[in-house]
Image 1 (tube, rainbow, N blue to C red):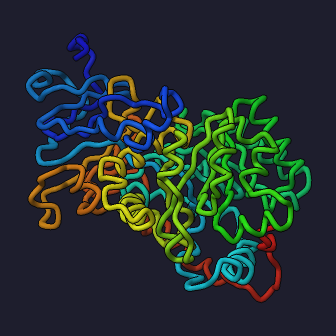
Image 2 (image 1 turned 90 degrees about the vertical axis):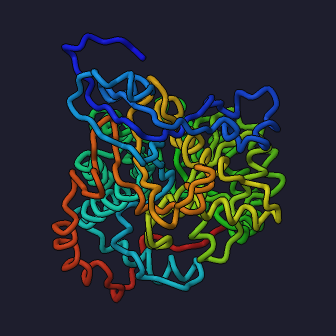
Image 3 (image 1 turned 180 degrees about the horizontal axis):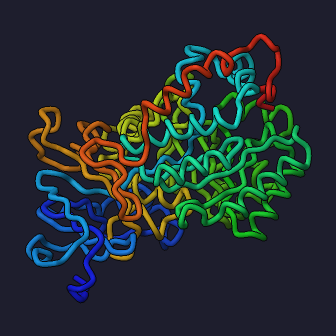
Length: 474
């Protein structure tokens, strides 16, 4: 433990908890043999452990030390949390979502993707006002805090309002202003302007990305220009690609290339890129991804794939080439919740089913996807995703004393298969408590809902016959 003068108290001391620890935080691209990632879940899953009766010291937004309660018994602190009976772990990371879409939760159900987009979502989105977007984002942030999410990656419109909601909430986020080529040159210009203006906002909690929607809505020239701007300004690119097999087949029929090959041709695999979904990846795509020189990652949102009848993201294949996969929910219009805890459980279960292998994607591997791999996916692999000295103090305290989690034979199995998001009691970002004992401290949900609900009739009106875009996956 670092010795400090007692006249300078720690900001926060948490005592008596069991702490999820990572023995190392290996980036799979640094492995001598990327095939090693297959055995460890593309990271440090084999090194996830649990330290009983521990204490965590937080100072200046960072974890200063993980030690014993006895070692900090006399340490002055601005705030102390008695966490006996609780488990401390890194905050969850929602690697791909559209927070304002919580306003569309449940509006378009049991539909194929083309009808979902063309007849419901894209007509409704023409009605969105900046205030609708901000209210939706505020409600989404409240939901994520209550579910133990401390960081999210968002990709939508009017992102200045999402940034404002992020700052108010206290969460950490990577934000990108989405664009289509149908907007003309102004679309990419707005995306770049947002990324440069908001980078480092909210006391550094906001990072930014360029956000072309997808290869089927953004043309080759704009994708190539995005890659050049990302390289010039050191920005992440956040996009959708190979969302399902039908989309991949349509792309091949129309262009002779898969969506992943289109990204590679544009240079986007040679910069840092976060690709949402990837359930339509082909065997040939894996070789293309391996040739990329950038830090490429995927985000998987298994609940939405089950609803749309899609395959799952091929985590085992991506692990074999050292590509990290973070966990996500997508927007609540398709996923219904922003519950990353649910995504973690479903990832473990659907991967076993997809691979027909009960030994693939163990509980520890699922936790690794939820922590270190998710952190790498959003470009924060050296800051969050693990509890260790020098990392940002983004953590949650989980109550495992309920009847559905007892007895605890293996903490990893209990977290992945038994625990629920409602078991998160406390959520902390940068050492600041955003929720204590299930009580939100930064957001007033009744007030948000009171303003949002009267706006819904105007928001959901579709009689105007307009769409922001047409869904044509080619």
